[in-house]
Length: 323
Ligand SMILES: Cc1cc2nc3c(=O)[nH]c(=O)nc-3n(C[C@H](O)[C@H](O)[C@H](O)COP(=O)(O)O)c2cc1C
Image (tube, rainbow, N blue to C red):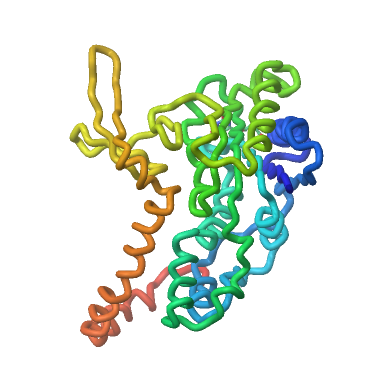
């Protein structure tokens, strides 16, 4: 069993300390486990350029590696090898630091369990090139993850998308989320070690993350505040002017009702079963994406000449600084 701590904070900063503290907890639950730690602060993890080489490679019978060569490969290998992962990131302007999102964009889409299986099923049926058994199966293995969001603010007001955005890391790979911890108020805490409750909680979350290894989802208890969404336990909602609301993380609909000052949102079992981090939820998206080509292809072909003509002024756009 391998446990990985991933810190996006400064070296020996607040995030580093809290992730390592969770790893101390993990060690208690799994003394035999190999524990590894990565600080990403000085690593080069560039953005996904959107080149599509990973998808093309998968469709042509290869694996779906990223062709951008930087420190991402090292981090990705460590994530792939890990069974349990603690991810911690400082909040920069309400959300986890941008480097975290770079990693999510480059890791998570390529580890979408439904998208990969879609192609592997086609290979099995002889409808796509490549040996289905040659695809590295460990990329699809079950992993367990917990998140620590770290912010300076004394209230949740300035860390409003911290923990929620951290959840984007693991859902495409269908990682089981054990818990999340919102460690804001660092501006007044001084050092995490001076907050006994924070240290005890992050230690316990790490312990429970390692203790979950090998368990089925139904046997795992959520560590953290219950939250509004029963799947990701976050409190963000998308509104459309009706009482039907949506969790932006899980993409599931709930029914909102108000009683006095109390607001309640009910998410049906059916909706919960199609949350983004389930196979069903991911498959909805795979099917949608797979339909794009047959819709756009003919449209573009039918308008080829018109598009060529009209695109000219966009190509020659005046004032383009880095052409
Ligand atoms: C550019 C920048 C933006 C920040 N934005 C926020 C913010 O929106 N909300 C907040 O609570 N803290 C914010 N902080 C404070 C950090 O989240 C906080 O100092 C954290 O402890 C840093 O983590 P580290 O010590 O692990 O590097 C910001 C810090 C920086 C450098």
